[in-house]
Structure formats: structure tokens, C-alpha cells
Image (tube, rainbow, N blue to C red; front, top):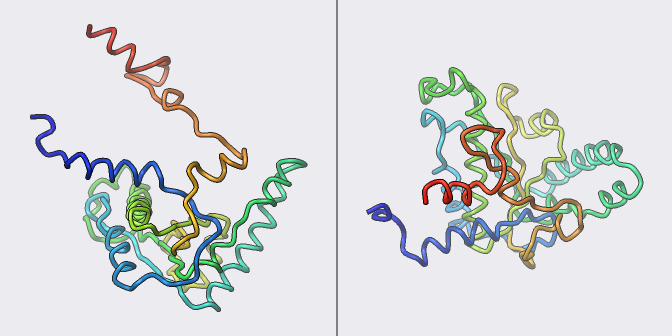
Length: 231
């Protein structure tokens, strides 16, 4: 009975595969644009995201004009110079070697903004945690990312940008928060493991390193300990 509402085995595997094989694409975008119907379908997947109080705080700015992309890329270069200055020696060289060409390469850029003051939802869930409006917009980004992977479309999240400068360039109201700047398009390949792992920038930590039970102080193999307790 517990599995009464589950998807078929093939459908479930598709969901888990999209999660497992999603990648942040920094370069290698192909120039051909997505069909408008597919692009709208991906945006609709984002729009179906959960949101606190059903406030739906997200706004999407689709960018395809080369001149606008170049202006955003100029802002990226400015921010990237500042970001690179915090690293020393080998780490600085590794940072400089990262390929971050998605803004100009990808046929579609998408800026996701959040209106945390939206009246929709009547404030439900935001009284004690107003930041949940931002979290809701991030859920929209993840929805789009997973749907894109299922469609063979790459997505790259550019976070090396000064939000206020991008908002000014795109005429986003000052009261809104810039949540994400995304590069979208078909790509040459999806790597088997994340690029930052390949480049030895960072490794994915095991689940047990971040998993706790009942209190934060719990440690060890959570599920093994619970199996012992109930056997």
C-alpha cells in the first residue's frame, strides 16, 4: 500500500537518472537554438515548482540578443578578476584554468529574479522565514535544470556576477533579488562526473557525512544503527 501512488519502474529511473546525471555546463555549448516549444516547456517546468504559500515569486528574463549577452559577459569578466584574487599559487592557477564561456556560447541566457514582496500567497509561511521566497525561486531553477537534462539540454549557472549590476543592465526592479543567471543550450557532451571533480577542485562527500538523526550531534552509519535498533 505504501507504494500505491508510485511511478512505474522506468519512470522512477528516469527521475533518478536526471538527478544523477545533471551537470553544471561551463563551456561546450552548441550554437543552434532550442525549438521554441521545447524552451517554453522547460520554462513551464520551472513555473511548476513548489513555492511557499503558492506565492510563485519568480520572474524569468530570457536573453538571446548578442549585444546583451556581451554586456553581461563584460560584467562577468569584471567580477571574475575580483574573484580570482582570493586564491594563491596553485589554487589560483586551477581557478584560471576553469573554462567559463557559457554566456556567449549558449544560444539562450535566462535570468531568474525573485519578488519576495509579492502579495500572492498572503504571506503564508513567510512570517518566520521570509527567505523561503528565495528558496522557492531556487526550486524553479532546479525544476528547469532536471527537465533540461531529461531533454538533452545543458544548463550552466553563472554565479560570478555582481547582482545589482546585472539587475541594472536588465532593468530588473531594485526590490527584486537576482537568484540565478543561467546559460541554456545543447552541448557537445555531458560528463560522467562533475567537471570540478575531474579537475580535482572538490570531491562529493558521502551522505553519511551530512546525515544526522534526532540531533545534530549524532554520528555514524545512521541506517545501519537504526536497523540494529529495531531488529
